[in-house]
Length: 69
Image: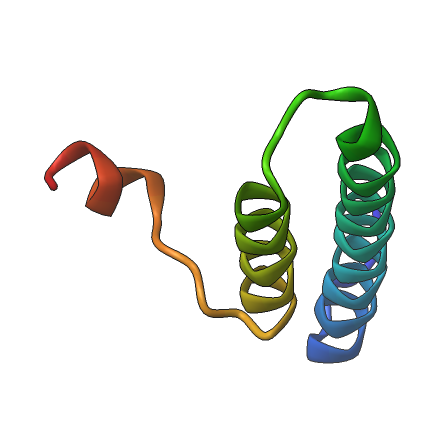
């Protein structure tokens, strides 16, 4: 059995964080790539791009916050 240390936990969290970064980047790329195909106004496209930037900066609401809004 492997001994669990803070270093082991930290390394696992670091790997999970990197996986989440990759998924976020992929989702952002898909959204931005598909925007021109969807019939949206320039204002709507700008709002979506602004929202993506806010998410990158960590400025987002949790699902619970949205459900309680």
